Length: 147
Figure 1 (cartoon, rainbow, N blue to C red):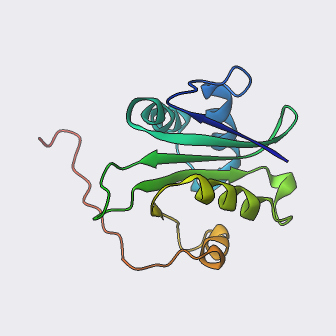
Figure 2 (cartoon, rainbow, N blue to C red):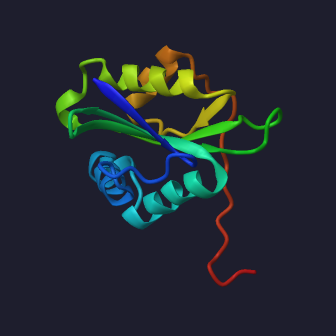
């Protein structure tokens, strides 16, 4: 298994284009994912504000992808947020998700946060790696016409 890191200095990869990365995540995140348009916004954040995209692959075949965004809030908020991780269904349960996560965490220079839905089976992987649930996340959704 090989890993390709895409970041602000490398730019869009000729083989693993932004559209290909977004399409893979959209398909393999299944019910835990976002619209492709939102995934592309996350990818663009990497190039404008920092972070990186990690593609796990065998040759040209993508087996998993992680997107990390930098928060620029060192010390009081984790320096990185793991926004997306998805593994091809054919590789699930074979330890690839763990290897992908460990590779990404080794590359991070500070703390990492992530959000996971309580019923997501990947929650157990995150806990086994060392993620803890210190806070309950709450969100306030503004109406689109609120200012």
